[in-house]
Image (tube, rainbow over all chains, first blue to last red; front, side, top):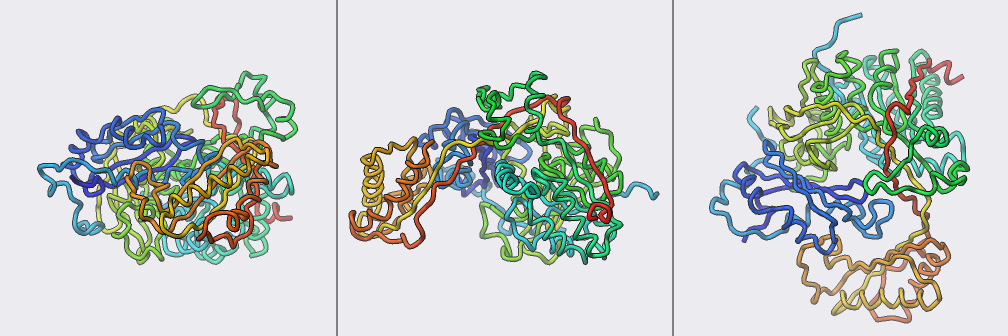
Length: 120
Length: 468
């Protein structure tokens, strides 16, 4: 098994009582793996304790990315929620702990060794 | 008048009210900026300002802003081309403009023009708007809120604030009329960037592709350091967080957009930082609405072009909807939360038992609470979906949060936390802070209004005249 965070990074936040998680593969190969394996239904199952009304997945193919929208999942949202994470800021961190089956080509999905050092 | 410049640099030095106070100063000093934007208004910030304005009619704006301008005066004098655009006006843009003008005048800059934008505050117009057919239904559920019908709304009770998200047009107009500083209330965050771009490049208001490029730039820099390494998943790869640089968007007349940050600052701008922020708080990426243009991110590309220099391209622009988003806040009961540190073998189970004791005692007192929530921090309370074996934890934080319409019930909960220390399990500490207090809840009500029903106005005055 691999940890989703080995091949992807992400960020989450709120819009009212909805949350979104932007999930981005480090490479094109990783993006293809996410396409197959990290479905809206899998994400809904993963966050079943929060009882999302619905989970939608949207593709941003040129970024090897998917946006997951979790409807009515924040216990009322920033103003009303009684949770510590009222705005869903930790949901991406939680999602990156997801365990997934080993891909055949893991090496092609790992992040570049030195981020931010693009050739000038 | 000189021709249109090839490019402009717009830096954003604040991502919310409470952001780092030195960031705008450093960005203005180090960023070679044409425009400094400062974004202060989260969804519920205006309701907090509404409370302040009730107590003092001269208040109701972000008080950090005039204090920041006071510190920016040397750089404003040294860089005559630097202009500021901010939504610090909150519920009182005119008051914020007066406070700012006084500082400028006192510093010998009374000849500079200060502008403010009004028209977003719908509270004074609710009756008129209802008569015109506005129903203010909830954006998602299409439910209605009684406060819009009730006389209480007109008295300023119940409903606390109602503000439409204005676009870039009044900002552009204020800049066209020579304003050095433009102060708005609620505008779309991205419009703080679009306004300067439209003023500079004179693009058409239906040139959707150009509006999209400027709006993407605004979307990326609006949260400050979130695009320069803040909040990054791989935070360990970010250099020198303590001196993190705030973001700069470089826009060209042809509609190209690059994101960068001042040289020599901490943090970084790369594909990872920009892509995470591009996806931040969006819904359907094919339809990201702003008042100026609807964005389609589905073909957007993010490309590293050099050290801390990222090009963002390919975002499509579409005509925006005929309605504007409106954020309202209304008074909705009281809440409180209390924490205790629970130590010892089986701490998670002990914390749960302790929390239930407290809630049971509030119930015994005849105060049923409308909502209760028990969290065990340290055992995965903020990590839903993640398996966290809690059996062998020896230290956790118990956090109880409650809500009720009745302030007395919440007050009773606050008084039931301390007694459990002497009348509950051993090993409870962390109660040294003062007893929690009931806090009024201001609930958010997102809705819409017809664009034609909203009338933005830009006022431009000399700082000296305004200060007098």
